[in-house]
Image 1 (tube, helix red, strand yellow):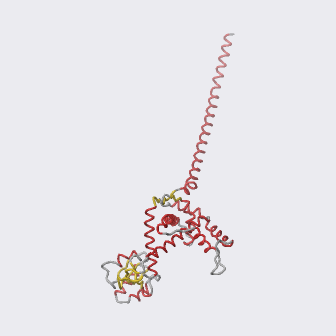
Image 2 (image 1 turned 180 degrees about the vertical axis):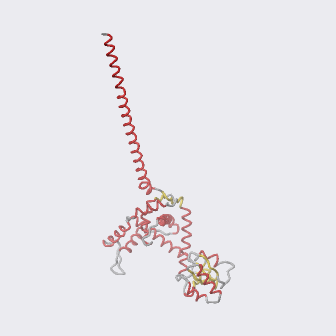
Image 3 (image 1 turned 90 degrees about the vertical axis):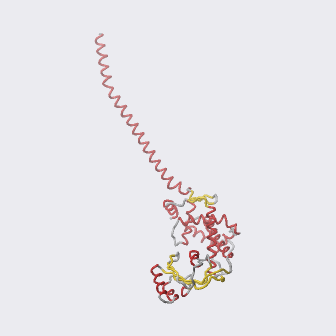
Length: 336
């Protein structure tokens, strides 16, 4: 009896031992499933993280990124969007975020410092400017005090075309009015008379052409004849390349030549590389105290205004990181 029981126990033990590998296999399979689930969760977390990071980099961060600080005022990348769109109005539709950044900085500086020279732009001036732009007067002597329904329709169509708000447009327009009024202010500060020299010039399309002009004049041809044939500049100079009386500061890049102590009257100078082109010139009279011509007065006022603005920008701009290629593309994408 005892032997039979021992035999039965031995048989049961053998069965239990045979079942052990099955249990181990199930445990392995369960662990594998757990590992797969953990791995899948990890991959999913990475994918979600990448998507979130991409959204942060491309959508959330750019409009909030500070790209300049002017007088304690932070300029964000998003601030460039409406200004860049509106600036394209005068640029033939070309979108240039760098121009937008420069305009935002300029307008911010002017708004902060224009009062120092007594220049202010009021909401009433902005409103009057908008009315003059979008209202169609019944006759030349009649201009409404407020936007009519038709004027409002025209304004809304303009805002829609550039995808900007009315507040954005009013701020941008205020900057333009400030520039005009500051230009007027510096024009009024320009003296009626100044020491000047009398200038004639030939502005050629290339250094080759300007050298040809110089060679022909040195060979005995009349300056005016060569000028009428070869010059490309017809805004400042008149017939024969006559610029007229030029005060110091009106054409700043030529000041060191026109007002040099070593200047010799009627001596041909050039070719010179200038922002206008390749120039050959001569001074035929002066220096002498002369009335400042309207064109030169405008040049002097613009130069004084730019010098004032440069000084204030230097004073006010704490930091300007500029914009990267990606930043510029982001701005353009918001407009298109």
